Image (tube, rainbow, N blue to C red):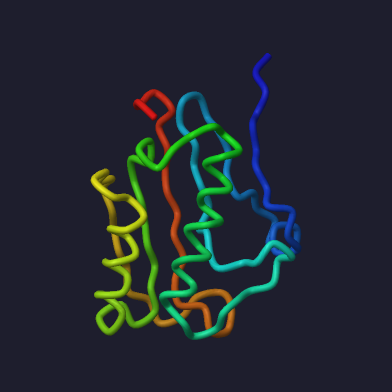
Length: 133
């Protein structure tokens, strides 16, 4: 019998919306859209795309740490951004800073709104544990 390795940050939104932050399926880890939740589950900071990206990547790093994975094992990223055209430079800078020389496939989608008032970004990804760390 196999076990399922599910990860949660332990924040209220997980039970409210009924989802997990990540789930491992074989060598793949599917990560739900990460966003700028603080450790208590509060959403911060409203309407500041650079600060939201920073905290979103911190939360993604928490998921990676749970599985013993690294950024180099992220194979696919989907980024949702409100007003993507206006925020494209900030989003691009944050993405390049986060990944360094690693280049996962990526889709960036401009959206009119996200779940929380003032939320500007959300990032989901897939991790392949067979890749070198």
